Length: 305
Length: 118
Image (cartoon, rainbow over all chains, first blue to last red; front, side, top):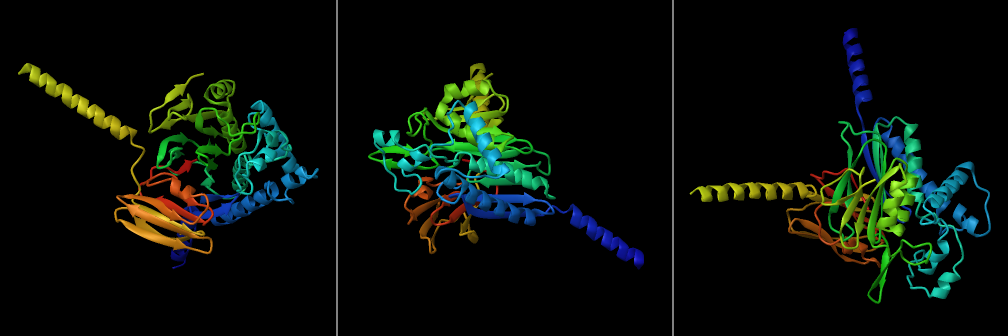
């Protein structure tokens, strides 16, 4: 009898420890929708902690909140924590690497176009020239959140996770059968996805597209990816850029920067880099992918080293 | 006779090639249903093989979701931007989202992807 009970307890224990619990949660934050899927013993706790992390990150970095770090920096200055300082510094470094194609100080332009309050308008050239230089980390904060989420998951008993942070995909760990994560790339024209990229392990897949946020006035479409040189929506011949990178922040910043650069400059930038791959959709509907991007499901041209 | 055999052989090889490339180029199978999630709560799971229309009304606003010919779309919305309607009819891919009204449509079933970036 005793043996029997021991056996049952052992079996139950084995079952519990072997079981990989899967939980899914939808969160509305950062003016977008986020989908969190986590597998593992601590999946419930992980999800709650992720939701808190997302909320805190939003409160800390929102450009629309006067009390956020961004709000205080724009009002004159702020004493920030080491973590916040590191983030700002990394955003600056990445901006330099892109030679300013990504700029974390476009807040003045973004306000001029009405992307903060939704009162969209086409600003006069003079208004753009007079727009104040203000911090806005909108092009980096979702990627940063993905990277912070990975660091959080590493401290918990989590086997794997896939987070969709408003179109930014962050994977964590490997799938049960060790097959790659398969990530679709949204068709800029709407409808179904264009094709898929396969990534292994912990990776970020981030897309910047002119279809994500825009308004139309007098038949012209004005999207949210502003060219730091002109303060106007980037007209680079691209409709979307997807960046695949081990680091979420880098992926987020580069997807914006490559969109602004256009296909040719972006290809050169990739040739000088070692740490990412990219997929481009042009405004004629052609698809290009760098040599190492495992793109399938569609016809495309390969960009070689 | 010989010519005819050749034509037949070439035609069948071509047919197989075209068929195979079409199959390979298909971006995965369509979903079999769509989950209607409002303010984070699952309201319905609508099968895509049945034409139907549901209206979701919350404090945020109203969306009309239409399933037709195996595809789904948001056909009416009270939101100011109408991004949710801009997606049009589709049967796979990323979630269809109406942010102002906190509405998410998510495909179920035979989706071959783990997530969609966009």
